[in-house]
View (tube, rainbow, N blue to C red):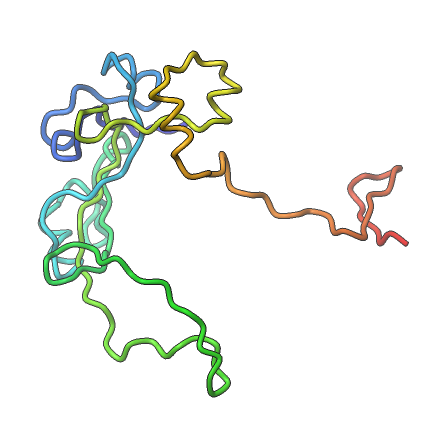
Length: 192
């Protein structure tokens, strides 16, 4: 069980300054907001060139190994993250890299100069749907299993949405030519 009480708000700025309330679970957040919510993490505030500058600016909101103490356990919904930025302050869209297969190397050489990065405050909160940022339609599998009554616009949104897994794929615990012993299912032996 999480002891963190995440803010319930329409955006990250409101989550820091004027949340509607705080909740640990989705049903509590839904009750506070009186509408659907989704858990999200968004950047907020200015970008800082160094981690130390960001820690000084957000003293008391994030864990700082330089000082003792820090926020209480229920207030640990903020964290610092390093992001790659361009001249306009936004994260760039990186193009996919194709393998080169030249001179015994599979991938092209990395750029000589590392990309410019900045430190931002990331706020985790329960986001309330707004006109600018509506909550995504549920996945088709979840809607079917939940036996929800869906309107035509929601069905169209589900059909247009990319396929996403419900949970991460688990690693295979048994190979193709292996079998478990009937007398002890914890033992895997090669199959002939």
